[in-house]
Image (cartoon, rainbow, N blue to C red; front, side, top):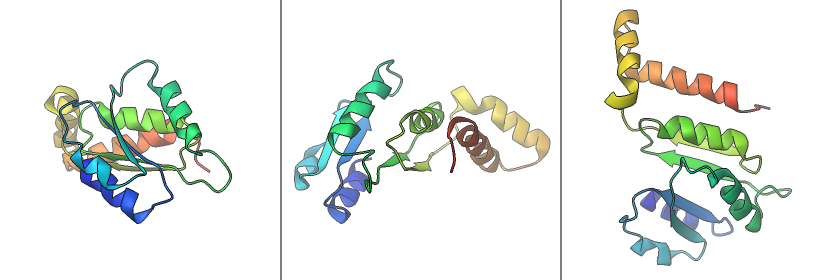
Length: 142
């Protein structure tokens, strides 16, 4: 989250890059390296997160004509990848989603692993298909 956000902020200096992380102890020292970069400690499952993100994005021009707003999710295992898809589908000001889940979480993906074994397919491929289905269900694709 941190270094990718910094790279994006440096590569796109006119963009506003907002990093969210539940871990309050995340090292945010590199945040000062770019004026258009901010990190916030947030619970991605908070009830008011969608409305707060919509207001935050709007205050930085997201959703205006010509603005490009990208949601990037890195190392989103367990329920975090589906939550990122859900938020992306609910926030009209976001134009793009880049999602890179990192692993299969035993607490949430145990049944998926069993199904993959039964189908004799790779567990990660089945996870990608599952996330793609969620994307189609939750996002009005143009």
